[in-house]
Image (cartoon, rainbow, N blue to C red; front, side):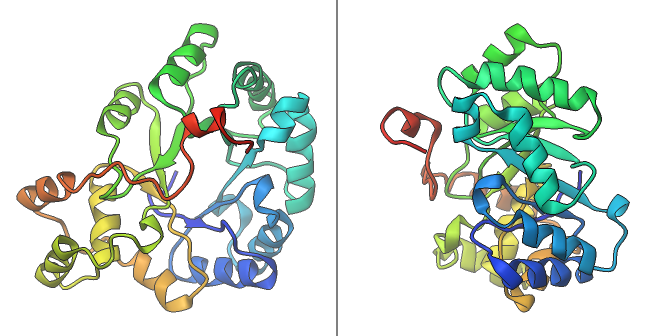
Length: 262
């Protein structure tokens, strides 16, 4: 799985399609979508328009909470493939650990995995105790745990747990929806390395072997987000970035499921 991908959350219609074409031109090969994003059809159109063979792309989608509660995992998966007009996805994720559902959902993902129509399966927004519960019922280790990570949200214990068990961590909202782009430390480091604060944040994660899927529909920012592989952040600066953690979530957290309906 590539360390850099394009997130398409809230990218709709032709905007999603053109962002994929632009991303592929800038070297992206991973596209991350989900059934709840309501843009899988556009993602499929973008894939067919990007000029790169399907086998060279890594496509991710996710099963939403409603399908989990209804026990309609196989149906949801088929509908995602139909909307994208694909024969398979490279990664299929449980979008959220819905209480009382995610264990049985994982068992159904195992069955999908056996068909090879999802060449890998994983999870999103899972905490350590969720992963431990999966381990107690399954011999298949999630390929990926997609969680919110950025300099202001650095769940080191969870990341270390995943990496020690061969679970690839993938960061969604790696730019914190702009929350750290004016941070003084980020700006100083951006000046030092002749990069932008966004590039510093993305590079910090990539150097920790965390895959990143920044979302953008603007050609210049898509290109900027990809320009992070020609420099290395020094160890002392990596430590400074580690210290910025505020446990700041720009999205929901798994515990929110107790109080809201997702």
